[in-house]
Length: 218
Image (tube, rainbow, N blue to C red; front, side):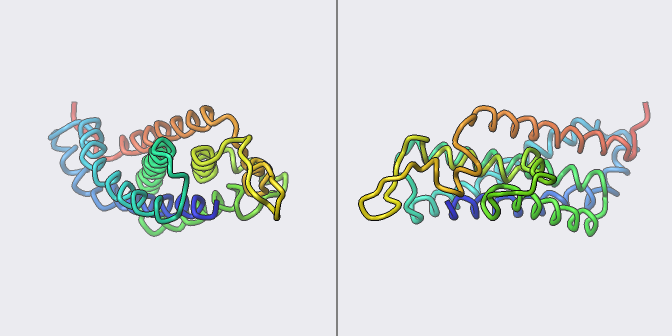
C-alpha cells in the first residue's frame, strides 16, 4: 500500500513541474508567431500535446516495469497492465494541471509555489497519511488527483473479498485494512471517469488561458 501511494506521489510531482515551465518559457515566441498569423492556437496546442506524449509516457512505463516486479506486487499480467494504465492516466491528468497553472499564471515561480501547495494538500487528503480527515477539509479528496489515482491502484491490486493474515492464524479482509478502508475499493469506474473529466478540464482551461496571448489577426 505504501509503495502504491508513493508511486502515485512521485508521478504526481514530476510531470506537474515539468509541465509548468512549458507555456511561460514559450510565451514570447507564441506571442510573436501568433501575432504574425503563422498558425492557429489550436494547431500549436494540439501539436504540443501530440509531440510531448511519447516522452511523458515512456519514463513512467520503464519505472513501473522495474518497480512493479521488484516490489512484489500482484504477479498477474492483467493486474500489472491495469496498474500501469492507472499511472499513465494519472501522469496525463497531472500534466494537464501543470499546463493549466503555467498558462493561467504565466509565472514559473508563482505557479511552482502554488503547485507545491496543491499537491501536498492533495496528498494529505488522499487517505494514506490521515485516515480520519476533519470534516471541514474532507471535501478536498473529491478534487484530488492523488486520491483518485491511489484508489485505482488499490483496486488494481486487491479485491474487496480478498484476505490477508493480520495475526497468526487469523485472516482479515483486505477491504478492512485502515489505509484501504479510508479510500475504498468500490466505484472504480466512477473514479476513472472523474480522472477523465480532469484530463479534459485542465487542458481546456489551459487552452482558454492561452487565447488571451497574442491573438492572430483575422
